View 1 (tube, one colour):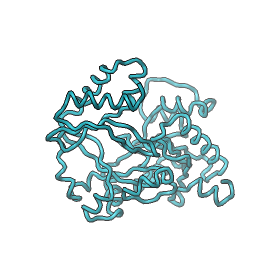
View 2 (cartoon, rainbow, N blue to C red):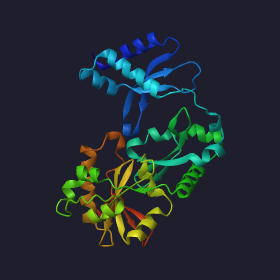
View 3 (cartoon, rainbow, N blue to C red):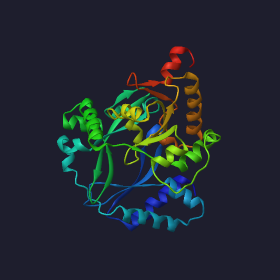
View 4 (cartoon, rainbow, N blue to C red):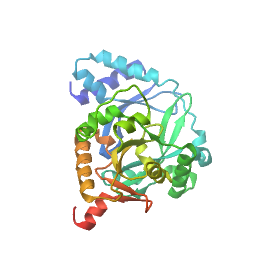
Length: 320
């Protein structure tokens, strides 16, 4: 069965099972031009729609899962979503949303058309978008803030940026995460010869520092769109003081950054070029397309309190 026929069959069966609901397919646009086909179910009395991704269901079907087992999985996904009514009244008032505003970084060039529907600003080769954290008994997740919201609230993009920065400062929204398994899987070939495997049973940052003193993984507390912590006011400066080092910033994904502490205390174009090639390779081979942030490499210079940009420097010096 081809994917189109599979989707049509799912819609047909779910419509028969739930005639009171509006069942159809839709497309959901994600980061970097990625689009997913979804089952969209809207039931009476609900002000939100159920969205179930169909590509994973189809892959399971091709791997041998029976069609009716797929339907059972769809039903299970619906049950897990629980109560389908979400109170949206507060969302009409920006004063009630302000404390929930957060930032998200995406690649500007790869999302240039997509982000036109959202209030945004440029940062290096990236774009800053905004979302609201949502959590109640019926729903937990995020709502992207669109141009329509800004018009409804009668605010500016600057108001969103200020709110997001203030929220990040108030909550101390960042974490240095000991993700040894990720580093071993993705960057082990770089670190080989620079550290010895250790397993002394200790936990936390001290163990990570002992093993890999020059690498730190930086994200937010939710570990979702955590690369945006690069914009948290004063954070990079505080980390540079803590480690008494400048550092290269590698965009591991939209969800996290890797800091490479610099022992030389000055930007080195050759090191940056090597790191650029590494990030580019990992993005092509290891990172899901929608999670790629950039191939670029950044550098935080504490004497300038500024993030430098490898692309920009390479263009100026004729390396790119």
